[in-house]
Amino acid sequence: MSAFIIEGGHRISGTITPQGAKNEALQVICATLLTAEEVRITNIPDILDVNNLIKLMADMGVKVTHNGPGDVTFQADAPHLDYLRSEDFLNRCARLRGSVLLLGPLTARFGHAAIARPGGDKIGRRRLDTHFFGLERLGATFAYDDTAGTFDIKAPKGLTGAYMLLDEASVTGTANIIMAAVLAEGTTTIYNAACEPYIQQLCHMLNAMGARISGIASNLITIVGVKSLHGANHRVLPDMIEVGSFIGMAAMTGDGLTIKDVAVRHLGLIPDAFTRLGIKIDIQGDNLYIPRQDHYEIESFIDGSFMTIADAPWPGLTPDLISVLLVVATQAKGSVLIHQKMFESRLFFVDKLIDMGAQIILADPHRAVVVGHDNQIRLRACRMTSPDIRAGIALLIAAMSAEGTSRIENVEQIDRGYEHIEQRLRQLGANIIREA
Image 1: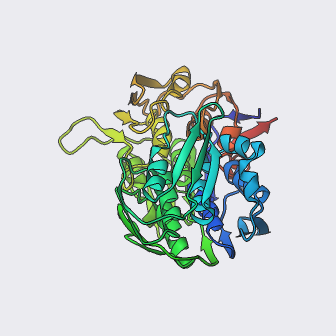
Image 2: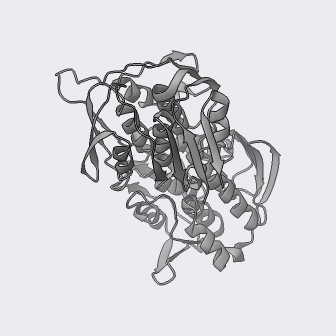
Image 3: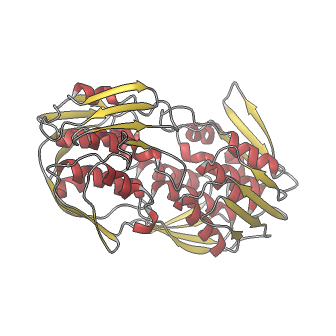
């Protein structure tokens, strides 16, 4: 395992451009399986999870052409369907959470899909019921092998459109159902669909490929099935989670940082959440400028009650930034309740922040009360391990602001979601090195 060695207290400044959105990239890359023609995708992030999916696609027989950095053409004209039953394929699926997004397109186009229970972050239960409920409503059947931990989905006679009300607005579940429904016979209506920008982008790309999807950006999506799709070009949005992470870094350790080309209209409540912690953000067209924050004060609600920051399905606050917001709050003036509703293990990293001197009360697996230091007491350097992508970047931000030199182990977790992060931060003035 690799580690980051971070000497805290170095102020970052300058300009940084966010990578392409990881979660969107995983969806649109899988969607290229829906056509035999070429699909060219640009602004793909150079990160571990995405690169592993691209390699898996190539080993499935998809023609993968790298046109330049972040610019890849996919052509699934003759995939090796027998590979989907191989032990190698199933083992790799088990290590890659994004592999679940193969279910919809494979079932829709080829009538069969098989995957192992997907891997990914250990942040609590991430059930797959919504995926299978949607595919079953479209006419597929599935069987689970408890011993092997594998799912087998079949639709030998094709899929048929249907109405469905999802019990949760699952992003990947909605994506899988959409990708399956575009080639189903008839009309599919998905109510309580996820409507994150990633889903919107997937729908726009599929429409460019010849799909007939309406209701984009709402939680009621209608899909009229078509016989086949054709090729298209698509550009991935900037990663809103990386944008939020850079806002957090700038708030804690910045001396004036510009975050370029962030697609402001797709950020939702992210700027507002940081503003509630007292962070000053200057929106300059499609750029954000975060001035130095020597002092920032947590707001209270209009009635004077205690500030609470909680995650929610889009257009609510993304759960992927709760960890970063919690770290930023440790140096604010005032107190805040951080409520992580969606995953019950995502706040367990706060024990390391407490070791660093943060004042945090972990009320239960979902809630933590943070009492800010008002930048009067710096965090202490610490040795720690990254448990998942988002906790990893939060610990990195804490280490950058701490007094002394910290060590973060298992940074491959951070690599799964952040592109060349130590190199980019060094260019801004951070003192961070990677140790193999």
